[in-house]
Image: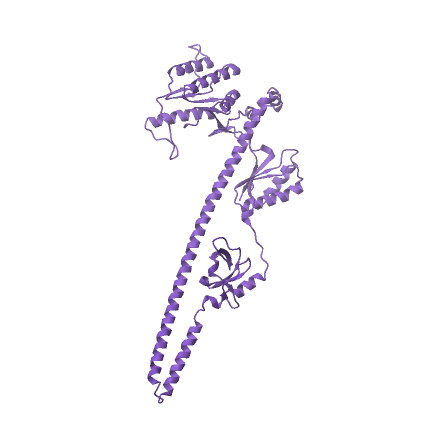
Length: 469
């Protein structure tokens, strides 16, 4: 339980989930201290205790004239006499088996005593008084043993920080108890009791939504990290290719210049030899032809950057067409230069950043200029997927069916583009017309893999949960 709290109050329906939780904690503690391997995830931590005391189960005895309450109290008295600060105390349904008001008061007194003695304690209960006690007492924390009302079975998942709802009315309804009896029972509850149970149910509902959104956010983070790594790899690859192209171009230019220099030196040397010899006019003409061919070869070599454009004399503006020397292509300026003197350029399918001092205002004939001019003559539709608002819920309450269905289509389109796995459509209960119309629409919807009505805590029949393809 760490250092956050000393006492944990576990609440929820009386379906066995709380008792299983209590037994699991006690057994794991004893197994770890006995050197046994725990059936738990890697990284699981357990505490070490000098003794483990437990009051679990019904120890009533006709032979010893012990009722349920007497049996529990006998164990509790023994635990209170022997427990020490390095002990772990486990209580199942603390204060049960007697008048609920007195039982809840006794349970609070026992827990407060153990808290003052700094003894680690776990207690299960269905008393609302203990839920409130845990909410208002420092060092005491609520927990709930999750329960699936649809299947009437515990899920054996423990949620710390949220008190559990007893679900007595809902379980009774599922088991066939007449609705009239349940409605009559509800009239016996005080307004504060009803409000407290509603607060618990609302907190659980929003906890599930938050957990679902957390998982979606984690998936989005992983996907973004993957895309970032791919973009970084592509950037490094382009940078390596650019540097290789520049190095190859420089080597080729040096080779051409060196070859031209050697050829020119050879021609000049031979012309000097025949300068004063008028008997070799044919040889002189041959040398002149070699010079002309060498000049033509240099003219065919790649031109310098200034041949395709001039350095800008004014700051570049959005829409300026520039020549990019190191890529030997043209592009269009997308943004104004930043403080570092860099700007973003669209060159074909490539969007890149470059220092403005390396760019030239493109002249006629610059590589790629004709392609860029053809592109600008066609209209292009841009879809900004990044600006979409990712919603996991759509509230249609108050809309007519013909108004709601277009909203559903648009909502499911956005959710599918955002790679959401599951979304909620809130239509309310009412007469059921909107719910039935939406269900009919979803049966043949291209984005809907399956759908169902909400479970208890999700909005029940007032919400439809859609699993997307």
